[in-house]
Image (cartoon, rainbow, N blue to C red):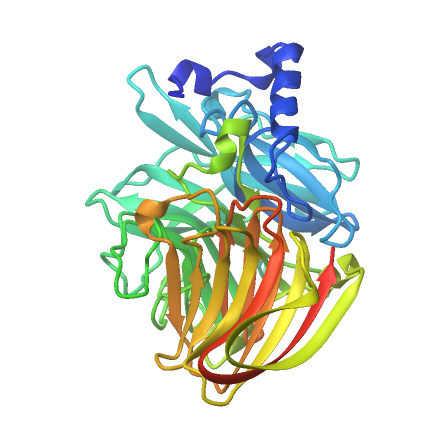
Length: 489
């Protein structure tokens, strides 16, 4: 179905209850509704926004177009949780009602200050010629959960030298000053991030562009996030327009980070290392982090990508969010690990230990469509070894380690209904390791794979038949020993 602009920019409050109920019914009948991931009740979910801790709860908003599986008039939908695992049913947090957000409430962030939660976001507008004009806007949530917008934008215009692709403010406080980094596009159509500062969250001053070593790195940097971890400065962003290089940059758009010295907030100089992709799978974009009360740096990403259609579209919905991940640093690289709170979802446990010799084996108790699996392989002489998930008559999802080439491989060529096949159905990355540990979260239509305690992560949607439930372990070209533990969810 082709969606017109008129259809994409309808407001949910203008739609008849009967139409919304029919859409909810279509969504509820979808085979691929998730079990333990945040997903939209209807329509399209994209970027996580406003990830924060306030008033004794975690808060997480996401961009939402409620009326179908396409990008249209965006709202902020509000979820909250006491444990990052069980989220309330949610409600609309910010509606696009003002002139400065007439065509959508776009991405942004949140910060607690003086007993309130400040929400900093981009208001998207279009004129009669469909030319975009972005505004940077502020809203405040009180302890009762009521959200009130500032009457006017706090940043009304784009600085000279940049195009109208200027959005996604990430807010933080250092000393007595507030700072925000915003994704931008220079007039020469290259991407970058710029810095603003404010004494009071209302009056903002343009400081200038963050000086990185990447002057021609894609055409737009979306959803930037700056934070400091273990005495390092980290600039996270989602560059658009990178060309594939070997196993790198295989998706339509990428997400990653630069790590180095802390940014000099006066000179804007950022001395850093190479750009590193955060997730080597198929479906990961627009990540956002927050610092929780325990001092943990937590990350949530969009398990999806712009301009990609998914098989759930026929049922009137699209996309979900990743599980929360805890960040740390090892060998000058970000390590991502699933938060331990997820262990509260575990129910029945199976475990086993076995040696495979040039064979594929299935074992009693190891099957399902929704579970957590930890599998450690100790190789003797196999050329490759790994796991087949969601195995059916003609379906399987492959996670393996190619020992000869020292590469982790995630293959969804035969996972079921295809998605974004034009960008390939296999993802790989090199990993020097003597032992391989796969920590895998399988939901109804997704897989998240943490390799060697988060040295690498692969995320991907899979759209298998409900009856594709078997798990197989394999070794090819020799012998490998493994130990596996599985928990039903």
